[in-house]
Length: 203
Image (cartoon, rainbow, N blue to C red):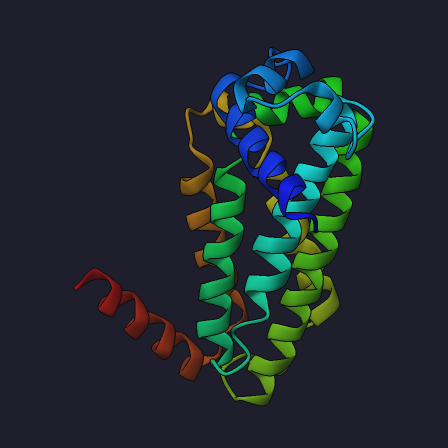
């Protein structure tokens, strides 16, 4: 990616997180970044395309590139690392940002969600096959179904109404969901290893 465009994406994303998506116009972004709108329009046609490029960039950098760095780890360590990546990426999306995306840019949000869910599904499936081979996960797992169920729960965990109604943070919901997932797929050996990692984390 063009270095100048990457800078525009990173700085625009920071502005959206700070001020929200709906409230910022292309004029605001141009002024805050100290560049002309003409420069921005060399890369994107409008605000919707800029938002889509930001989402693509964060998905590719956070989920794709970083998740590929854990092939040396065992399945549980890999899953713990990947869960942090997913949580960090999700924490970037505040309830206000998610609301604006779903209401004002539904097509962009849908494409982003589909891509993200595909990446998470593929990683979970590979991880479970690896964990079974390493003797850490149950051998009777329906790998495809469990992966689909986890992705569905991850999607539901971003429900703004649910979070607000129950006064929950995404981080808390994700923590419980992930703990339940790993306990559900691990065998006795895997669960013992997972518990040892949790103890070390608390020390």
